[in-house]
Length: 119
Image (cartoon, rainbow, N blue to C red; front, side, top):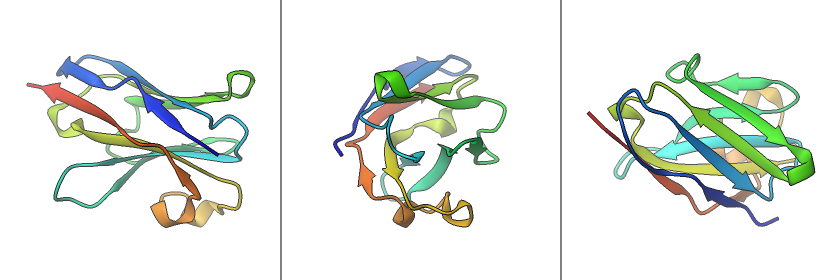
């Protein structure tokens, strides 16, 4: 499985971005994580027959997938400066719900795409 994350960029606070993760459509679970240099990787959202979100993004971000296009998406609205990070997508086929927010549960990772939110 090869994943290609894209869609990052520079946006003002309050703006929106939509990230894509090509190559993820046929996996059971697709997860999005983010990492700020010097900090631990953080769970953002996942899709496994339903949606899962970190409290910090719930209501602002939406995870979805298009299996026909073999692609997953992360729609990010009402962006805040604290959302600035490198965003990664990851997939796995044997992830149980209790570990869906743990990066170690995922088998394959994309290369990351940088999201910068200016204040």
